[in-house]
Length: 355
Image (tube, rainbow, N blue to C red; front, side, top):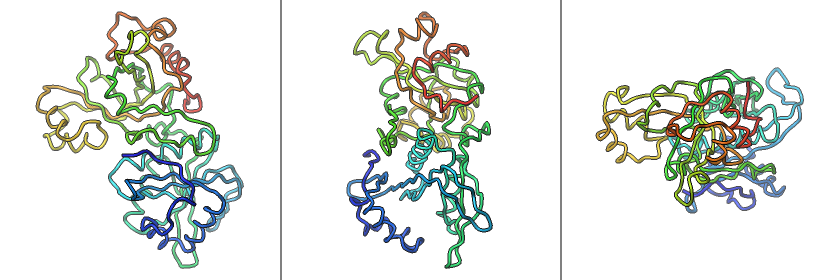
């Protein structure tokens, strides 16, 4: 799968059948699209070969927002102008959501909103998806043809304590803190490195098709069964054997645990595969083999909050964060001080951390 690409409207074929549903729902869509092309606007798109599958357009606003019976006052807002994923049941919607919220944080935009019709099953699914990530209806917007759109808003200053609704923010005081070691091959698939940039759509540039919000990891390391909802994981990529582990093993990112299961929580193999298949790096054949070959394992789902801007080598973790070299580094409890020190060493963006 190729990465998401920032592409000028002018380079996207308006006659592509992908836009037929948007054209049917929104009167004047073609005119709007051509205006964006003439203005040099860009969108985030994903093609499978020559087939357009995903399209996202964002717009910065600061004017009043008129709704039915109420007008929201002028405010700096990020509008999700167009959001379309061709196939449900994939993780690609999460890739868009991650980038929407990253843009709002990096640009210091306090409110994100989207307007959408919700009178079909497909659109109701889309609405539920936005609500899952903290958007809620503030009003409706009627059209001359009798249809009305729901207006959903995410207030970026509101933190509920719900890990998914608050995403990508991390509650510093919530949960215990641990270091979790992952081998390089698995790490690359689960936690692709991405560097946020500060200019326009560059901060949206995608680096991997696995760059989703939710991840599932399966392991049997000592102690992982004590994980619980809200715990924080510093992801530690073990050495790639290209040099001494002192310099090649690195802390790379921060996740929050959202769910923990063991093999006993699955009634049978099929239930295990259904739960793990979407967010795991393993294919169905591998999952089935693991289920039969391991007498005990832990499955945990995490929310991928942020990648460190600076990778923290093992040497620094020992000398500057106080980790003990002789301890077991597969799964290691961290003190609050060690956790904070690692975030600082990794130049973790403080805008994502809330108290």
